[in-house]
Image (cartoon, rainbow over all chains, first blue to last red; front, top):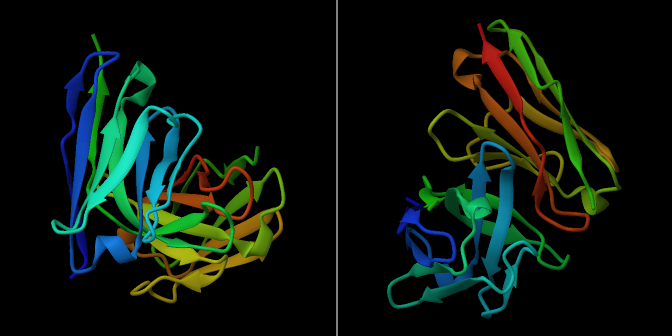
Length: 122
Length: 109
């Protein structure tokens, strides 16, 4: 059965850092498009970052330069390093396997984890 | 920047009825790259439809998608109580990609 489980969320002060993990089972992270999508009551669902099988990474404008997506093939795990966090980054962060298209950094999301909550507050 | 507007914001229907949910894009969504998701309280979104009209694996044929360019529709026929959820559309055919609508809340009374 295909499954992803996110961990690593928590409370962090503005300007702080956090690393989220997404452990996958039932499929191989390194041969799939893997993404992070976040959700807030106010802004709804927002795509954050993507990592392709060939190692190419993409980030939404709102997080580019602050967030880094990576993976550990041996652990079949995806990561999201969040730096220089702001209050606006407070959200439930989902790890999702994606399906890509010929368009640049365009995906739909076919398998989601339950999410991990990141709260940025002083 | 493309904006997806979903309507109605909420609707309440009875079991057995048909629900029609709309998603309108402010710009053309190329290649019909429009997906629909279902999200129940406390759960992650679940992919229902991609490519405007292709059902995802395991999705019953009561769910159907249609539309093109800027106007898309999710139709749920023969409503069941477990269809109560928030439904989101998402486009991946315009710029910037991967944007979502604000959702339609469906209640089965």
